Length: 268
Image 1: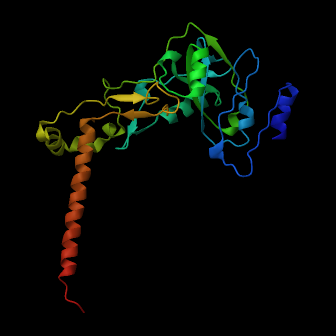
Image 2: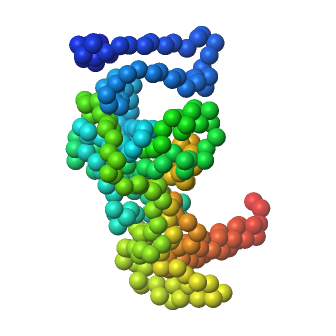
Image 3: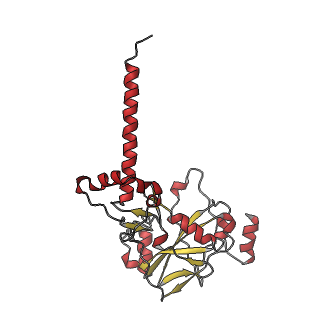
């Protein structure tokens, strides 16, 4: 840590050191509030490199009178057309895209995931209540960065001209958001596809309704920066499900036959 600390010493930073009591664990840590005069919000990210992991997520909430934006880091953007969902668990490439776009700037980039008046926050927490009473606007920024990229401390400034940013992404009008829709073998299974899509006259939407970035603007705790598909799925997804179910049933039948044969064998 000495080389990293020396950089801040040379810039005449003030240090505050804290240590857990012997009988206390990390679960006992409470929020620490420090107030000091300054011109711009800044995160001493260089010190984080000592104990950071590769591709570590860094989420920053900034309360002020207007929206905050990075000064010495690039502003990242992810188009809805770039989002892809995998498999049946709702996983997606959102976090991967943040890392890839940040890597274009040597890890020095932030995406604005949420920016709106503080009155829209419905969370009930003393710390948030205090911040909301003093500031009229809140900005949430996120990035993915590795220790070797933590060479520049991000600085932020406020810009009243920036538009609000919603933390909801609606992909309900899009097609091809699932990776399985691009596989070639699905087109060779029209019969199974028709059986599944027409079974019970169930509607088969062309694309899922999707919310992204967080479960809603109501609370920082609930903001997990994830992209999750809503109910429904594409015909291609239904086809894939049908194929897997058919294979699974065939396997169970084969297993039953083998077990039946084994059970009828005479004992030695």
